[in-house]
Length: 168
Image: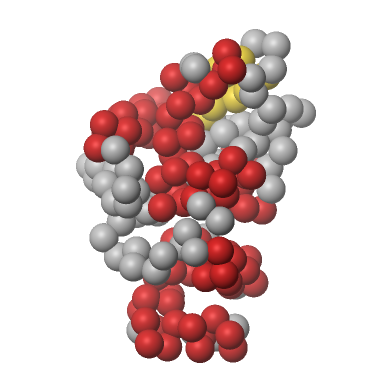
């Protein structure tokens, strides 16, 4: 499954063409692509716009909320928002996979730009491997990034064996 297919499947709202053209929607889709690919293969302009958007969200302590009749709106972050970039409301469908995508990127601080993860070396776009990593992450209560890091730290030669045994 391609990363964009993963992002589309986990998209939390039912949006129309008008909504899709709004800047917040485009930045959230960029974010989804970034989380699904580690930024590899993303356009530099998209990464820069995403970086600026995430910094604004963090500096202003905001989340993105969606209502089909009003579109997208920024809201002040509350405790219930946890580490999500989006506000879960009656119009939101947040899957387990979506919870791993629509959150803050790992290791992002105010001074770090959104750039491709240099340590993502496993091709998560490959369906069988990507699915295994996703299942491993769920089973061990990890983000996709944390699961990949564990596998990379365990050594690529042992990664497949670790996935099969549920270890690392």
